[in-house]
Length: 448
Image (cartoon, rainbow, N blue to C red; front, side, top):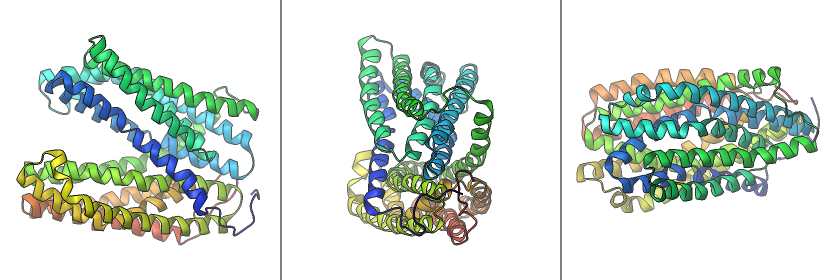
């Protein structure tokens, strides 16, 4: 156990939280702009290429969500060592995480190339759409290793309490991606393949940019840059629980979409758009979760359990009030949203109805996301993995009951969203809240 801060000190004052959360939010918002820019540019080629992009984008988005543990796990491990005052060990751990990202990225790209037609075929698309999706996917695959390196490097920088560099890289990447896509798709006439290539080149450039920052820090503190087998394996083992947690989370969303499908086309369309709005709001709350990861890791690494608990109380308050504000904003803008998505009357009514549920439950989301970030920052991945599976087991039968018993259309979709919030999100709230009331997660020192 290493001491670094006075016991009981509140390590997360308002300025520090904002200093981490605001740039983190900007970086999180910049990331979806990649696919939005691709969609706008490819959309000019016609409906078939745009549909193909939608399928390929879904595959790539799934890969990002599966490997997000590279960012989360690295943030927690690096932050602990920063708190313990050992920057050399922190950067060595971070470099190991980046090597792990590169290895996983190369492996994923190598497997996905021959499997691309099969992966696309899972969506049941027409041959014309499937061909476009395979083209985009294969041309974008060279960027996958870089994408995972960026995830790990972002985790390193967050652990070092630097969320501004990832913001700058993500923002510049969004601009470069748009320019390259216009040039390759329309300027050189490469079609959807040009869009995939442009995205891959952008990811490679972003990996170089973030990598340079981390490498400079590693050299400054005499941290090794060579791949270390033991360190890479340790990073992989630490990431497995977070991978399980993420898969369970994705499973809950898939179950919800499956249940919405049974409520008819209007309900499914409304659900998809409402879920996109929900995810957008989640980005704002997730920025607080990222701040919680970094601050909790630093406090526990410094041996300051009292400070970690005090910081948790403050960030939970921020999460709750942030949820209140977002909920009120959503209710205020709710009537303005349907025209943006050109929803038909049946889908429009369902969309407006479920937005009320989403708005009312934003404080709950804020509470859950912050505590999730606290426990990730504490390195409590095993608990998150176990309860993640338990929560999915609790929720899935409830969603199945809604699928079988609730009526179609708006009433059925509202029932599903109430089930999602009162079943799944409340279960997460209970399990996370109970854990943070104990001392089991307050393990201090440079390593857990």
